[in-house]
Length: 122
Length: 110
Image 1 (cartoon, rainbow over the protein chains, first blue to last red):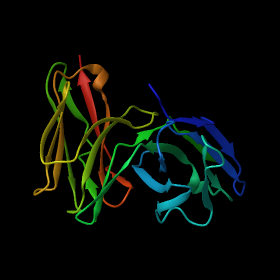
Image 2: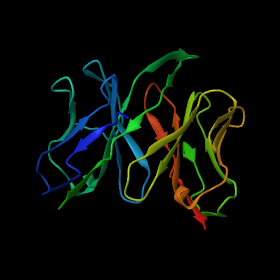
Image 3: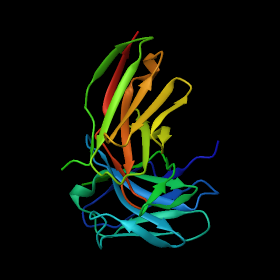
């Protein structure tokens, strides 16, 4: 069964350093996402990406964050200057399709999550 | 104002019983609703999704949606100890992003 993969599984970095988290979405999926989960808290949306551009982002996704699809398979999240509060599990997800809007709102189809990267900023 | 609310639990049920997990959401325009299972230290695993009012069954799982009441639930029949996990309700409130609740911890005792 196809699955989303992520590397590394655990990344330790010092405050102020740049980190790149990598993801390989499911091969026929076209929509890609990053979420994060701080320990003991809920899963939070960061950004969605389609057709080589950001389609939606949250308030968390500020200028320190960027995403890229450098080739046909990888999807990356870069944090330019890490802060202590960036310590969290980062999950990549992908979705095959996105529904047409109904009553002004799109139907979001199933998003499948990767195993996550635990980022520890010291 | 919390967008997606769940009781944090734990919800304790004996093996073989029905577990009932509930979720309410605040955005009346939400169109898509998902249940994920998350084991401790692992990623969310999609187990059910529902887009229309009513019930949707898949094996031991039934998702129920009532848009008028802004309520979605998950029933797990014949609960097993391996079902012990945190169940996350997620709602699509915009174009693509999912908004998650804090999750309900389910404990199934043998």
